[in-house]
Image (cartoon, rainbow, N blue to C red):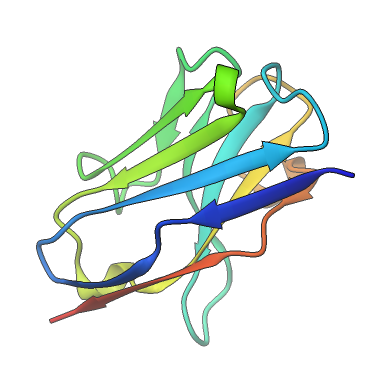
Length: 124
């Protein structure tokens, strides 16, 4: 049974940093494209970042570009999201996702597997 489990969320002051992790189990995900999405209260889910199977290609939402970094460790079946210079508008539930195509992809419809989410709250 495939599972994606996020961790690393929490409460942080504006300007601070957090590192999210997403561990995959129940399969081999080294050939899968991976992504991070978020959903703020009262808003639709939005794309944050995506990473190719090799980690060689990344793509970010404009709102986080230059502040967030997505990376992966295929030996651990884990993807990370390093978030720096956090802003109150980054407050949301963050979800990781995996897709069987190995390329980057910024639409949630392209992902088959999803985690349960981890809360990130940035105070002003």
